Image: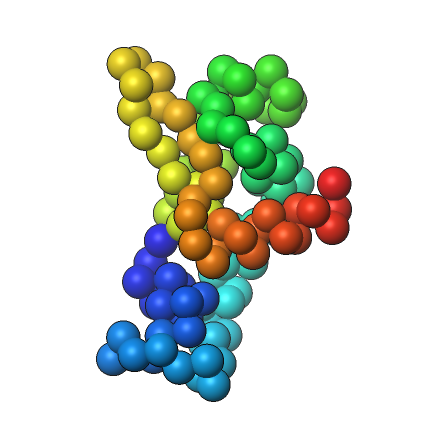
Length: 112
């Protein structure tokens, strides 16, 4: 996740101090919402609730091609919404800890 987004979601100002009165910059909020602005990415977030999965497991649940799924996962990872870990040849994805992941889970709970 870009530092500006994680800081803004955590309520930190540009100095790193907690400041719940500082609004999230519009460009930061827009970038975060853009990462969620896809039906496939919303389905990925919903599929990852409660457990990590690899690309093959996600493809079994969500209609998509492997390259397309990888692009969606890369965007979610860059936005700090999912985290990943490598195990052998497989990459496993799960919802990221913290405010970004919590916010996405909240949005998905309203949709799914």
